Length: 140
Image (tube, rainbow, N blue to C red; front, side, top):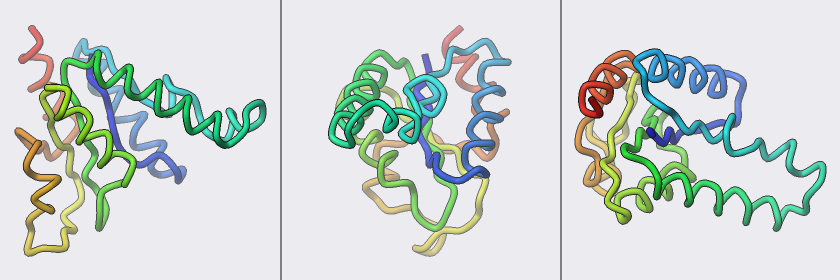
């Protein structure tokens, strides 16, 4: 299973994540997409307190990070999503191979990522199709 980590707040981010996850699934991979498989915060808040929502999201994400065979981190934007950064550290600490997906050329430090983000990442892909082909071949 591939754990897919990235921002999921704007309509554009949500749509991108669905499209990228579909590419991975088309290649035969199982994907944990938090916005789809872990519950949406806005929906959860209808029946749970904010503290309960936070604990449930963290629990669900931790469980799926530990189960993952690969971790794919969306690196688009001027800075990576802070929740995805935490998930990256947790995945790395759990021994899950970590990869990046960067379709956006913006980077703050002369084209380099922050060393704490770059360090755990084994490879960065320029498209979801490239990531899908690599990860599918790796899991075969």
